[in-house]
Every structure is written in C-alpha cells, then in structure tokens.
Image (cartoon, rainbow, N blue to C red; front, side):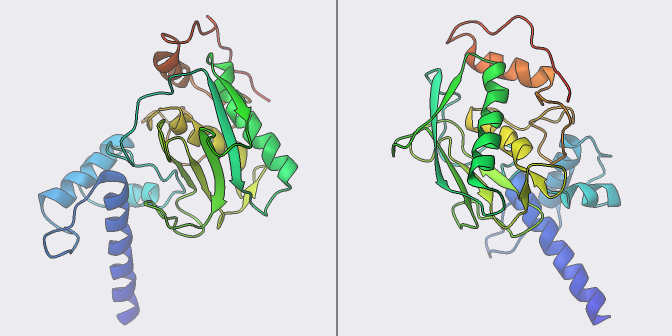
Length: 254
C-alpha cells in the first residue's frame, strides 16, 4: 500500500508540474498546487483540446500517455519567456555555438544544425550564417542547465528556444542529458533542432500532428519536414517584409 501511495503521489506531482509548465496552472496563496477545482480541471481540458483528446477534464489513460511523451519545453499557451517580438527585422540571421554535446562528433552536429536551419531557409527569404561573434542572434547550446526553464533529465523535455528579440531572444538550448543522434535511435538532433529553430524565428506550437511545430517528438521521414501549415506560417511572418517566398514549396521524401 505504501508503494502504491508513493506512486500515486509521484504521478500527481508529475501531472501538476506538466500543467504548470505547459498550461500555466497556478499555485494557490499558500504555495500549493491547485490539484482540484475549476483551475486544475480547466487546464486539463485546455491540454485535451490542444492535443485533440476527449475533453473530459479527467486524467484518463490517453491524456496521461500524451503527458508522458518526450516533447519541446516551450509551453503550448502564450506568455513564454521574456518580452518577445514577433519576428526578426532582417533576413540574414546569425548563429553561434556555445557548448556542444559529446554524443556526436562536432562535425556531425555542425552538419545537422546547418541542415535544420536550411529547412526554414528553403521555405522563406531567410539566410542563416554561422558566426563566432558574441552578438550572434541565435546561441546554440547543449547543457543540463537551470535557466528560467530548467531541464528535467532524460526523457521528457528535450529542448527549448526563445522567440526573436535581444538578449536571450532566439537562443536555443538542448538538454544534454538526452541521447542525441543522427538516426532513428535516441533523439534525432536534426528533427528537434528544426522544431526549435521554428520557435527562434517566432513560430508557436501547432495542434496539427503533421506540423513540424507540433510539440511532442516524433521522428520525421520527410527530407524537408515542413507541412503546408508550417510553410504558410513562416510566410506570414517574413514574406511581407523581406521579399517573395517561392510560389511552390514541394515536400520531398528520402
């Protein structure tokens, strides 16, 4: 019974932490999480609506399965990070590495990150240039750090990125507690990086499971990754300001 009780407590803490992080479940005045009542139930419903689940407000097996899935650390609702602008006000964006992972050779990391940026470059008028200067727009880092949105060890939160802006704006962090790979085992760095760079360019999470900006991790098999929604979203942010997007953007597969 003690073991069952401990498992129940840990499960509740996990669910509460998930809703607090991704759906802004608030503490009560005494610092305790609102486990019952309208606030908790409404946040569960918000999460179920976002993922297209049965909207019951109850933590059924389908809801718990989605909560346990590895995912991006950016919340699914607004108010993430510092004050952000919607987009970069330029079409040449620089990036710089701060720390590498030991899981892959540096040359492999460089190639996968460059390919991830190319996903968005092909669908927009944007150009991405690697830089060694301290004022690069996007800082790329692998760490088990404790910033405003700390990582949680292997398994759940894979990475996060901040939207365009000064300071930490655009910075993209990968949890180095994960196993980063270039293939289908572990977590594919190319796929995760492409998703996070979408945030660094100003895109939010999508409810569309075919979208690269869907928050939960899944290995893609498309060479370009982007759905028609992703292309439309990046167009809406940048094509009006920096020239035309190609009229056709063909998704290709490996």
